[in-house]
Image 1: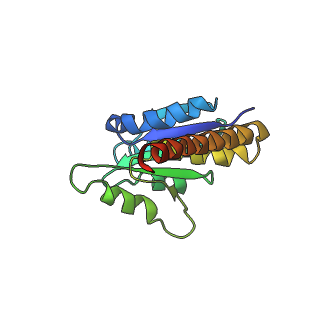
Image 2: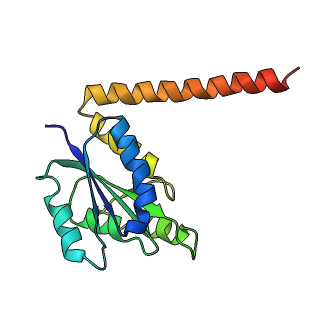
Image 3: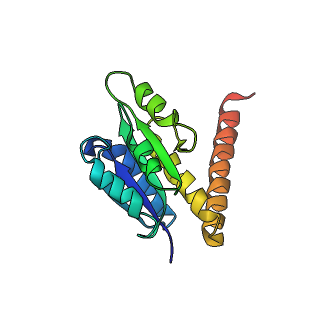
Length: 165
């Protein structure tokens, strides 16, 4: 059975960032499920999600939250599955508070952390983790990387033609 990516967001205000992740996962045909769970407002549900994730076919969890951003840490405290934290921008500190809350985890409770609002990279990292045991997915990732490089080289050629004498 193909492993799913579990995605949790602390609030539906994080949905635009999560859409970047789900769009990327769809492009690789990776199954996923999405939930809104708060580390502070629904701690029981968040804990149960993490504790039951492995038996529910989830291989990696992506957790997006802003401000105090304890969601990824709460997930990591309740499972040994890989957790990828997405710190989300807030109006007060531009996401720096969420970044620091997500990345500063105690020894023994690791959380991989992507850039502020980095939904697409969170999905790519989840795909890379799942690809360790899925050769077809690994090839899709290699193909994407090659296609991305080709696009950059095409832009380079266009800029050279436009600006170099």
